[in-house]
Image (cartoon, rainbow, N blue to C red; front, side, top):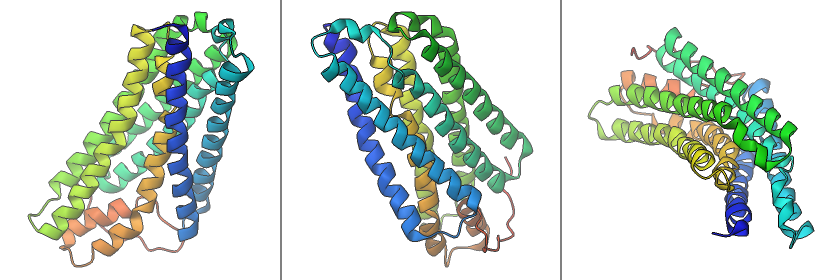
Length: 287
């Protein structure tokens, strides 16, 4: 693998995949506002913030690709510079992860009323955010790719905590939904869909975080880290928007299901309450 393959090729793969995911996020954003959910302003502003963040980040890394592949075409020395969108990736991903983790923590609280689980989720979210911001700011200051290996310790801590947070949230949601199974086909089909969604929530983000970590440690002389790191922010935004968009469908499908399990499903739907809706009184699932 020559210099261009290791540095520019891997980076372009990450940018291409990120652009694809940004297209999905744009579609989800349009559907969210076209559906006109009567969500509270805080939630609507959060969705807008994430979309603006994703738009800015996706545009900035396209500029980075232009800088390396067009402006400095035939100038391999330019690959030694860490252009500002590269370290900004850690900052943008940290914001997206923080917002998504907090809203999933609220979902866990609605489902379990367990202060310990809620507190651990919030703690992991904040710790991951602080470590990610520190990584991004330090990388921005360095400006040269050759100095990035000095960030190994802080970056390892950041991505490790992020993977732990994703795994923790996934396990809790899977346990809650699994314990609510009744043996009735209609109810269990809905719960299986929720379990699948919970697994996907942590699986994709976890895979890309681990890929970034392994790439940075094992192949520090390449941009394999960037190939996995760049799309992570879009994965988190996709997770949040997908969760919001499935609420209406779940409300319709819960009609006719037995009351106890329906309570768990409804709580999953109403984890992000609206201004006008009355929140059903449900019994939390103990863990």
